[in-house]
Image 1: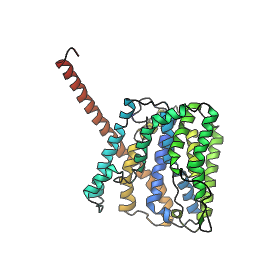
Image 2: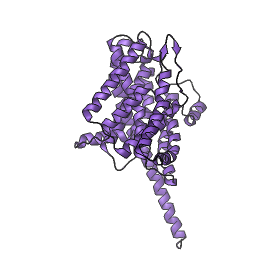
Image 3: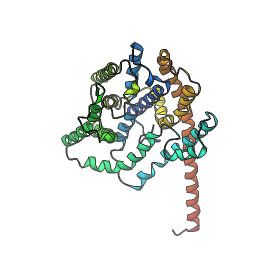
Image 4: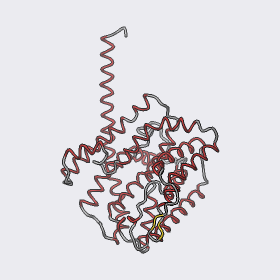
Length: 367
């Protein structure tokens, strides 16, 4: 998936590519739970606990992309060049939307008219995963102003206080209000600001970049595993006998936020001396946005069009660990072609502009 400032980067850092690579795998995995019927299955038994563990892990994929956006863009300033940099992202979105619309209409035979599909490109519904693009566009235009705000917080302690307040109001309090006891929701804390979580993660990425926060790798790994076990155990205990759909987890869920930050800190400064690993991770990282968008077509094909494993509880593990890699690899192959096409398109128009400039100079030699 795209992270602002990470599109077609010439100078790449392995640790940051690794974050993006893991994030897109987790996003594809979380969609497998959505399409396989797992969310409607009764939570009971060891298999369901293992799946719930994976579900908790996969839920922080999108959050990693937003953290990465903050890390890469904390120096961006308000200028014309910055605003033009969103054009490749929008072009890729448009190309994949057209592919998805054609696929939905003529291969999956969705009961939707052409006008609905075309209109869906602009309201981000033609690709049902388009909500992230909608959020991203707004974040993109906020970034120069967010950077001004962040840089004018005078001290490290003040920045920590700011992040804590953002965490409380965008994640901690809203998560508490989702707790249920005897069928009654606990609305004891303000949860009005729950949609501020992209700002929390963006500023957290800025903070990590500025102070190069590190945790010893062994301790960091242990913390990730402990948080995952705690999260999955609490959910299993709470949901036992019911389905996860009774407690819809949003991206601002407290455990997901903490997991994403810990995974980012574990990966972002990792280095490798293996060229094979470096170039493999770099490829998947570069096409992650296209993978995210085009993966809907492959999800739709395998899970809904073929009805593979749908609603069969004893096949959920097989579904997660077999179809997720298949969807990921097929989406990566398609994404490579899409990104090559979009890049070629930009090169073609760049040449046209250069030719036009040369012609203009010949006509006006004194300009």
